[in-house]
Length: 74
Image 1 (tube, one colour):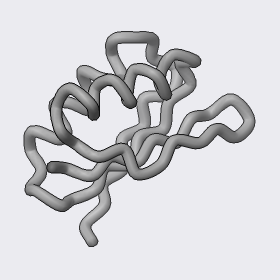
Image 2 (image 1 turned 90 degrees about the horizontal axis):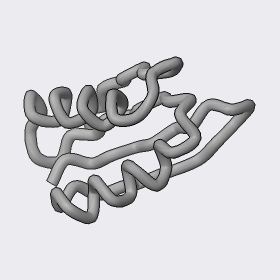
Image 3 (image 1 turned 90 degrees about the vertical axis):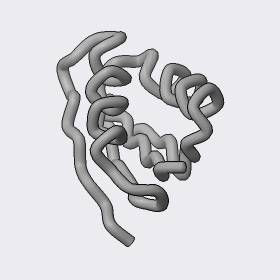
């Protein structure tokens, strides 16, 4: 499984979603994007983004103020 890492720590909404959208656009179906973010709204934003776009949110976790969001390309 191909996985890409996108580090958007320090960026505020809507930048994490916009950067993830751009990264996903360059990826193939089934590939996985792991996003590291510090914006507290990121988990909800990514859940809504995946619901709207059809991508799959495989993981949404938080450790020491950093959110790890794993998105599988539809």
